[in-house]
Image 1: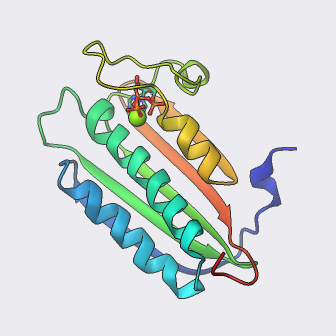
Image 2: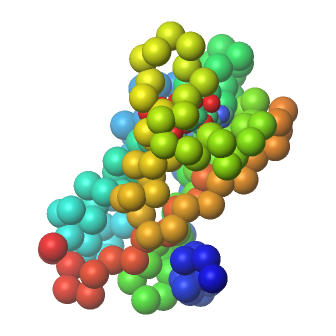
Length: 156
Ligand SMILES: Nc1ncnc2c1ncn2[C@@H]1O[C@H](COP(=O)(O)OP(=O)(O)OP(=O)(O)O)[C@@H](O)[C@H]1O
Ligand SMILES: [Mg+2]
C-alpha cells in the first residue's frame, strides 16, 4: 500500500497560485505555501521541510520543465489542507515532461550536462515529505504531488 493512500481526501481549505516560470518566483511560491500552511500552526522543522520540498519542485519546473521555453511557461501550485492535520501540495508545469519518472527519481540522476546540479531534488522532496507522486507526459508537462502529516502538538 502506498503511503499516500493513508491520507484523507477530505479538503478543509485550499489555495491556488499561478506564477510565470521565472526563477524570481521560486521564493514567492515557497513563501506562499508556507504562509497558507501556517494556519495549522506547524512546527519550525515542519515548515522548513515544506519550504525546501516546494523549492525543489518549483526549481525543477523552471530549470528542467521549461528549459526550452524561454520564460513563457507558468507554474500552478495547489495546496490543500486535509482532515487530520495533513497537507497536500501539487506543483504543476506544462513543460517538456519526463521520459522515465522512475529513472528521474533515482538519487544522483540528473540530465544537467553542465554539472551544476546534483540529481538530489526528488530525493530531498521524498525525505522531507511523507509521500511523493510524480506524473509526467513528454511534451505535456509534469505534476509533482507531495503529502505531509503535521505533528499533533506542532512546534517540533
Ligand atoms: N518538472 C520537470 N520537467 C522535466 N524534467 C524534470 C522535471 N523535474 C525533474 N526533471 C528531470 O529529473 C531529473 C532529476 O531531478 P532532480 O530534481 O532529482 O535532480 P536535478 O534537478 O537534476 O538536480 P538538483 O535538484 O539536485 O539540483 C532532472 O535532471 C530532470 O532531467
Ligand atoms: Mg532538481
